[in-house]
Every structure is written in structure tokens, then in C-alpha cells.
Image (cartoon, rainbow, N blue to C red; front, top):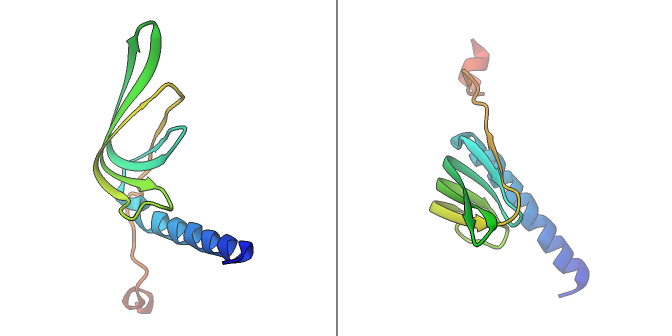
Length: 108
């Protein structure tokens, strides 16, 4: 396998992951970013902890999806993340009404 083949493979995998993200993002309520991963989740519990003078974050996610190109199963029931780095939690905005784009509705 050439370097170009490998690059094309990685590009295709990233594109497939983006498409999956686009398809599932509406199923979740939160976006969580850590230094190592990006998650979608429906429940997030962020706790600031201190031990031996060090401060760290413990994040528990329930009903989550993990952005990871090399992970075969991206849907996870429960995730626990412990990190000394920043954690970003953002609530996703839900549309009040989503109208499906179907041919039956366009004809009316």
C-alpha cells in the first residue's frame, strides 16, 4: 500500500465518520469535548475533583456516541472520563418542529 493509498483511505474514513455524525447528532442533547475525544451524549455529569492538591475533572456520560475513526462501535451506554485538561460541555439546540423532506409533502 502506497502513502497515497493510505492517505486516501484515511480521508474516506473521516468522511464516513462525518456522515455518521451528521446522521446521529439530532439524537443527542449534548456535545462534550475533552483533550482526547469528542462525544455526543444525552446525559452529562461533570464533577470537579481535588486530590493531593491537584484538580481534575470527572465526566460521566450516558447514552453516548464517540467520534473515533478507528472505533468499530461508536455508540456507548456509559462513558467515564477523568482528565486534568479542559472539558467543554455544550447543550445542543433542538428545533421546535422538524418537517421531513418527503415527496408526499412537496406535492401538496
